[in-house]
Length: 93
Image 1 (cartoon, rainbow, N blue to C red):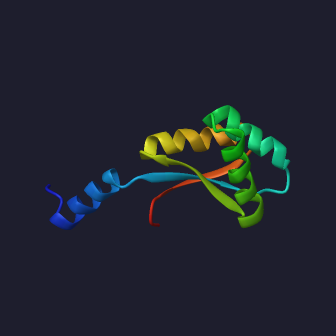
Image 2 (image 1 turned 180 degrees about the vertical axis):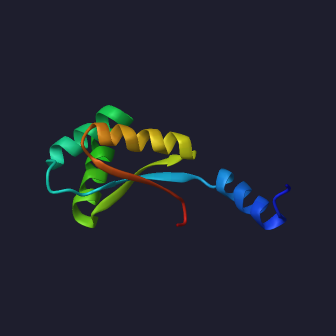
Image 3 (image 1 turned 135 degrees about the vertical axis):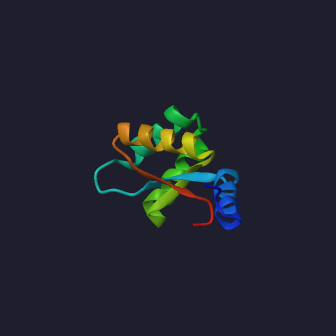
């Protein structure tokens, strides 16, 4: 069975649009720990890691990576391994 054109276009858009990994604030982890995870795992500079950590702390979340869905899911799993709450979503949703 052939998918209709709308379904095909929707699937194509999903594979072409970038995805993001979001880290959410939690009441458990220290800000210094969150920044250290960002430096260690993503290789961010101290300044970038601190800025993302402050966004998590002040706004409740921060986008820490953008790219293909599979890679963003791996990042979210890694953040879970560091005991951080992370989710993945398509850009624009």
